[in-house]
Length: 165
Image 1: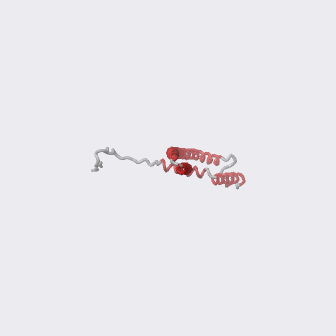
Image 2: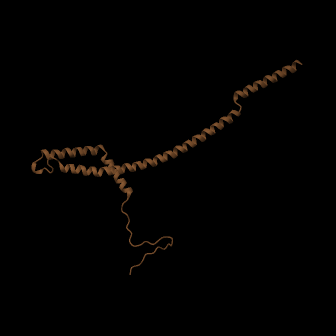
Image 3: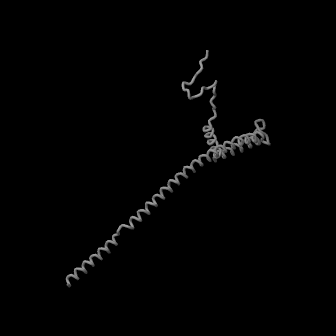
């Protein structure tokens, strides 16, 4: 007899039969597509592909007749290049989509950081304005010197006036 596996929790439904996990992992496939796009888009790949094509053409035109694999119209070379292009294009597009998603996230983060910086700078501007207003009420050194001179002159004038009386 086979045992039925039951969940001990009542808030979770029981599984029915065998369930297969989906082996497709979009993140892993995306990383693979980025690696392929990075390699295909390099100068090294272009140089190696150029060397391969030149060697293929030279071997199949100048090489020994009984060892030539692909005669003059180079159909096998055309087929290989077409297959490579048919696989490379979607992988490059996938890599571009992932980069666009990353750029979108980065733009959103930049936007929130810019909003924070704007709020901080507006706060600091308000604080500076408050400090300027508060400092305008504070007596400056020149103002105090002038006031003290005037007081000294008044005192001297009143002392001279008392002496004259």
